[in-house]
Length: 220
Image (cartoon, rainbow, N blue to C red; front, side, top):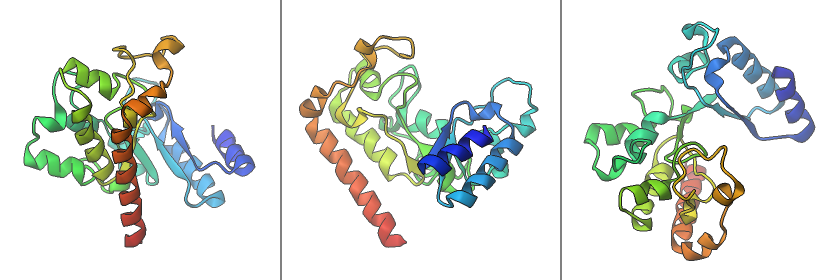
């Protein structure tokens, strides 16, 4: 793994890596990968799935979100943010539209200090390739594109790294399929006509990103 990571940075100057199921890799290996990569590219972006899953590695040695203190330089998909802001995975609650208790809202919008020491370790998201698309969750709840603005705004404005799934900014759905990894192109394809249909949501998202980028640049 380490050799492959080094090779692609040296040969293709890639900007970073996302590690699938990072939690079933050991801390020592992940730290060695980081140490080697920052020698080549000091600003490389490293993140992954820090779920604590059963494997042959002791829990204290797994590269999980719970062990983030031992893995400086890595960010994690923040399921705390996902569940509180986006609602339960099965689409049975509204998340941030409930509304949230103030202490929970403060926590998720400030980089989840209840979990992380540094907001830069938090990948904030309400939609990714797994589980329902935001558009499908909102349909389950009897809601629509009007409510999508709130979820996208919270994701982009929260401290940490905002993560948007392709198509989220123009209300792309997966026709109600929850986990579409084994579904055909008919389900997984990006329907670009939605970009015309929901251009206002896409423009809203674009402006939020530009504002965030400007504010970060100004603070630096």
